[in-house]
Length: 129
Image 1: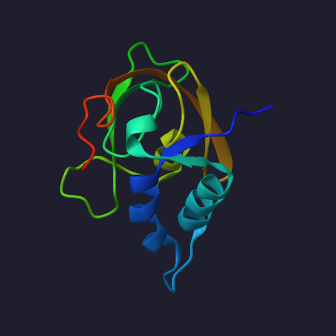
Image 2: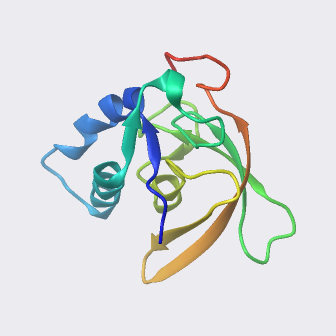
């Protein structure tokens, strides 16, 4: 049984426009499914161990010696981060530290573990990020 993901209401309001465009692809469908099953809470009520937009996260892929660092970014962001519309990005949004996420890429599904959130805007009281 999976736990209901938590997302910031600010993130939801910023992501909603991505779900209504003319071009709907697999990435948009993944994001829509996540937001449909997630519980939206005000930014001040987001638990500190939940991945939100603009979070920097250490993720370990099976077989890798060291974890990779990702910053979860909005599409077309100048930050160079991992887009929330990518398979891994969509899997990370709303995930918790220690959680194993599954991301569908092509014909293969991959797993990764959220090891640690290095930075979460809400935890640092950066409520406008």
